[in-house]
Image 1 (cartoon, protein in one colour):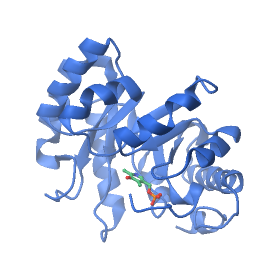
Image 2: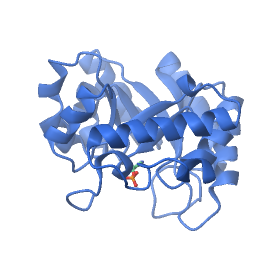
Image 3: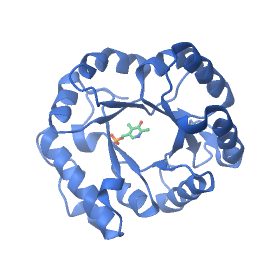
Image 4: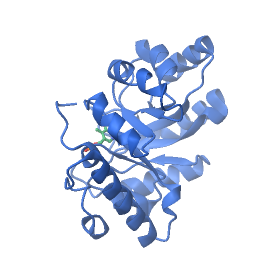
Length: 237
Ligand SMILES: *Cc1c(COP(=O)(O)O)cnc(C)c1O
């Protein structure tokens, strides 16, 4: 965590989105170099849930291109208009996806990170066929095996990932996970990174504001930051 504290921004300092974004990038680069990794191998996902379009535009103006939203309807209201000016924008779904929203999600998102059960795999496969659009997919693992949370349980993860690989082929690009709140995140990050390696998946989405240095040390290729970039969320998400 020292790598993180050496820079402002990820802890809430900085007064504009541009300043905080720059501080986050610096902190990521510092954490990466500290463990001998290339900062360019780590994608910063700006989590813009509940943030207004103006804040997203400010991030876009400062070069940010990957955004994460956790609700289909909210993302549908904010992003299509922005795509016209930023064709290289990449929109990621990081929240729980209901099967009845699968088609909307396939239409809207470039990456769906919350594939966590066979019924959703089924719904997404059908939606991809109908829409003739194939977003990239990540399997979400429930790292703490917490029944109230999303994600496939760890003991079922290998079989589920293998089944998704057979069904989706190259569209399955990685895994995503959130460690349990009070736990040391390091062993959870190590578990997820090993899981990705076992299945030869290149994308490992793990690490948030409080623990991204540990995630980078464990091999994260994508970290997800919300409040560190945008400040406090206007409403609970
Ligand atoms: C909200 C959210 C984040 C970002 O959280 P912050 O605390 O705002 O950095 C990251 N990942 C997921 C899945 C989220 O829902």
